[in-house]
Length: 141
Ligand code: 5GP
Image (cartoon, rainbow, N blue to C red; front, side, top):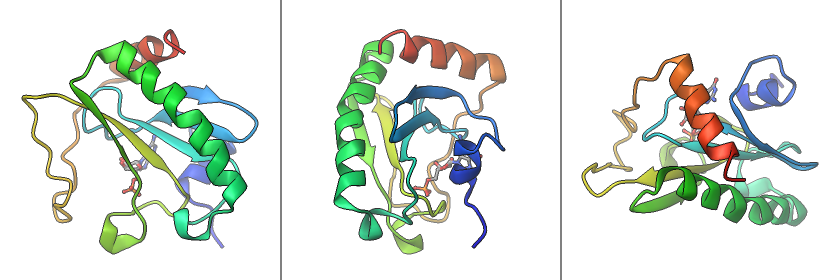
């Protein structure tokens, strides 16, 4: 089986803006962010999605999510935060390595999460923007 993009990120074959790492979990900025601070949290152990993931893997991710979500909250002071996890193509999954989206939400920015044709129109950001966002979040961890 070919590696997914996220396994390539874990193996450092593809660069990423790292937000958090421990023995079991890695978090990094989504390269096509819906809002500033959009972060992905993945297990180091591969599973396709939540449906084939071991309880232990889910527990490791579960332990990391509040820490990272609170760092995103403290960095950007959003009006809310969505944590979203898509399973299979019809439900919006496009990368088949389990991942959780942490998405800051703002009152004036409506997002249609169920638009599968124009999925989550991303913000256009430069490398310097990603570095600034990375620094803002990691300084709150
Ligand atoms: P899904 O659609 O599977 O729930 O989410 C996959 C996410 O991965 C999308 O939000 C997409 O923007 C993000 N993504 C796809 N390719 C890359 C990449 O090469 N690097 C990073 N950091 N994110 C990616």
